[in-house]
Length: 392
Image 1: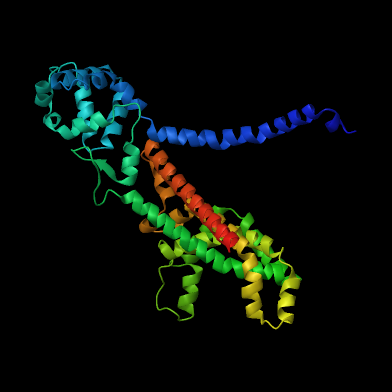
Image 2: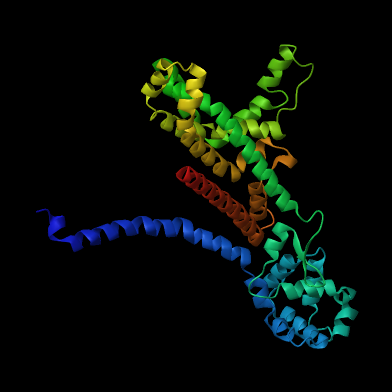
């Protein structure tokens, strides 16, 4: 008898140990960063810790006590913390930074009453400033998601959305539109190429496959830069168009939607071709031969026999391209115009320029949530279709 049969408990233990390795990697590489992003989008410890006294005084609603608590908190802050607090509040309303810095520096000399604060700076009489502080002194905040979705709390406590505040929702819609356009283009171009690799002669198949793999092995940045060189005003394509008298002057082919779609389609094309090619290789050639022998023409054979069996590869390739395109940053940033930037561009902008990690995290969660919803919708649709077939 084998050792596994003699000692079943030992084999189970070995299986559990082997299983724990990928589970640990999954937690470390995926779940932990994801939890960190969600935590950053809700974290408000910087403001919540700094305004601990004001948070306690806000409960009774006494104006003078709130003014005294505010001065106590601002006076106790170090210069670095005061600057960070002013920067974060300034994201809510322009001018808040100067007000906080000015009040914090003179906190010891201001009378600890509401009248004293207003006498020092009339802006403290504006309830909008106090409302912003009240919404941002907790340990957890929803302000990043409110800004990401354009939702705001009005004076009555109701959620409203004003024109122009939904900028990131419109960017999300643009991201989905560009992603869908790229997915369709990659499938339209990739399907004939995958068909050629699978059903063509050895020379044709090898040539197409070599070109696809060469593109796949080349850096995304290199491929994108190559399209910048080709599509620019004095690039090779415009030079050829003018030289052939097809246009009288160079055409704007880059820094617009056309350049973005062309470059992204080229970069993501291998991810559509390879899954379709793998599925096509599993389709028996004898089925097409049988269809032709029964009197069906080549078009009918393709549409009724071959194409339905290749749909699984189309769905896998299209889904892969769609998911990858949603998070694209480098290619649209280099080849697109201001109205062609996707959500990843704004996430990177918040991280690198404004250092607003909370807003970057909120937009990342919004993008991830969109992916999860789309995948769930696709799974539900697949389940409903399978149930219909079962009933039929």
